[in-house]
Length: 115
Length: 110
Image 1 (cartoon, chains in turn orange, blue):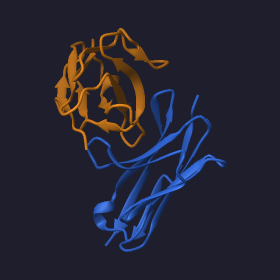
Image 2 (tube, chains in turn brown, yellow):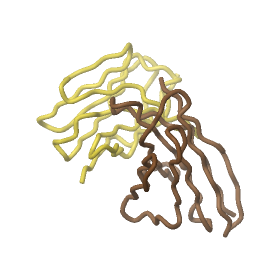
Image 3 (cartoon, chains in turn blue, red):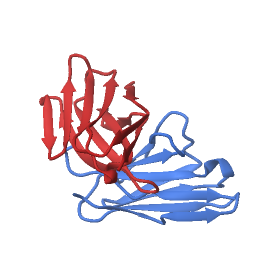
Image 4 (cartoon, one colour):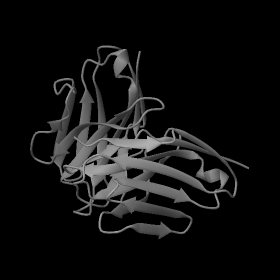
């Protein structure tokens, strides 16, 4: 299947700092990527839809100024958690839609720990 | 919006037995229903999917059934093995997005 790569896989930062997570589609072009957040033993909650060349679409309750999304190319989307706080500690997962099939392929996730 | 309910939340079976996980969805416009397997500390991996024009799909030990009238779909795993132990998520498409169920933690005991 298609490959989606996320980096970094783990990151620890101090409260108040910003953290950037990258999501890359390695063998296909993705005009749309999705960012999910997953707390321990919970389901995946969609945060935002990242659209190549345009602004991201955020789900209700997700602060767009805190979670900055940039989709600068057809193979790369980035999520920046700004002024991180301990409550932002979570597993962040990106996914990409390969073509028009509707199939969604996920990255391996990035575990953020904010001290 | 779309709501997906998944049951059971935990499931424990003996190796070799079958496991069934069920999901219901609310929006009849949904037409794509994938199932994902997530191992600890990793991202979800697509294991099988079904579209609304098909009632059943099988891939070796894994099968999915869809009842559009009742708006529910199920994952069936036969001849379970310890390596099947993981968290399984169902999902339903809605407005170009995927809405996930709550997850089922499957434990296969040797």
